Amino acid sequence: MKLLLVIALCLPALTPALIRPALPSDSLAHRTAREAGVKIDVVSERKGLGAFATKKMKVGSYIGEYRGEILSKTEVQARIWGRRKTNTKDKEWIRDRKERGQSITGDYVFEMKTGHFIDCEDADHSSWCRFMNHASEENRNANVKGFDKVSKDDDVLDFPQFYAIKDIQEGDELVYDYGSRFFKDP
Image (spheres, rainbow, N blue to C red):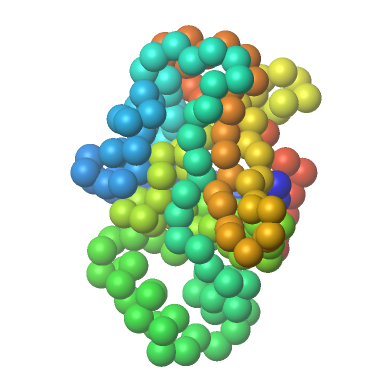
């Protein structure tokens, strides 16, 4: 699974509150978190928000799905990366995001094996899984692992699925290894 994140690393002096919009308690992200036994809360000023277990989760348990808006590469190039001229549909999408106070940083974009992208930056259209922070699986710090899920025909796009790779206690932060492409530009 490739996670493409275009992080604002050149702006280290800004706190997460300044570069990320407020997260309304009635957003889809919060609603799906409550259903999954997860709380979205502040980890630190540097990291911003994270996802925390509100119940015990056994190794092998289904944790959640990285669900968001499905975009084509052409749409991502215009709307997020700025590498293609925007058309009317792109401009409407951008205007809608801005009017609702949702940012467009590209920080939460997954590229799927099918060539589609999942954009989970908009809290009104994405699940809580975008709030899981990075931890090294190699160093045994990760407690969750993500898996791509595609139908047999490759005609239906499913979303990345996350499972516990160790027992998780109530209050533990849910973290997974973003992979080798985390800090690379798309």
